[in-house]
Image 1 (tube, rainbow, N blue to C red):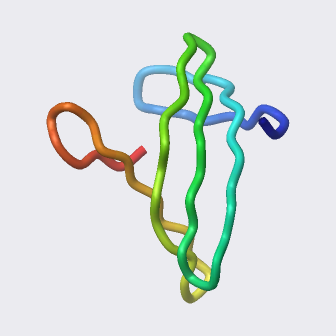
Image 2: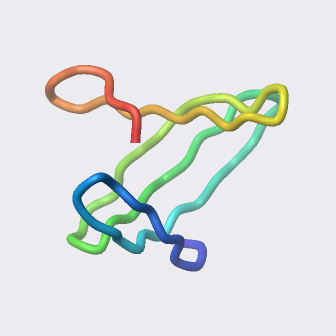
Image 3: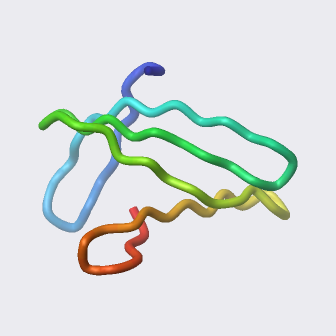
Length: 63
């Protein structure tokens, strides 16, 4: 995993590790939250904007 990054939500701040891979516009990532487990992410980098999403048991969710 890569160095920790700070993510702020409406409820708290958490530090997570993640690894990004890019193939053209397609981006995949693995997010490792402090409470354990890994979360796969998929998305794209286009026009200077990175968009990532993950599937949760409830459907699509944007991290």
